[in-house]
Image (tube, rainbow, N blue to C red):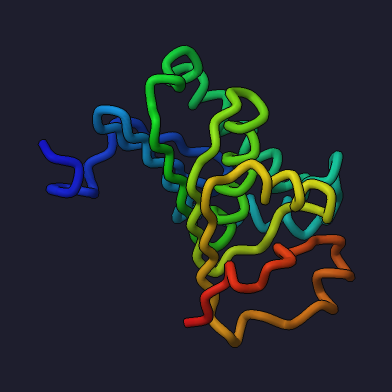
Length: 170
């Protein structure tokens, strides 16, 4: 089966706390997709209890760590065979996708491409700068009505990339 023939077929699926992660492999290409599941309520409960953990949103980090544990079982020792890693996510899954990219860089020294849709940023300024350096390419698609400016970012301690050209308003 060619990679683009049937994109809904994924080799691995990981589900935890309202998040689903699908992984597709094709020769030297690895595609990771993260998005909310149908049972997202537990994630909102965690999210409402805003806390930071070493520059990360604690709720997003907790969900990522649950996915990472399952992902590592399948990919930890063979991750280096992929020369093209793409990570995509929407909504809360987009925030977790960004953490995923930073993990792949810190753990394996692998840069990836990240594409998110209507996603919050899960980092403070320091972690955001680390993320910017850890990816080959990033695109963030947002709907204009969902962007509230700098006030919420400063209020919650998060930071979007300083290069706003990375954002495409739909």
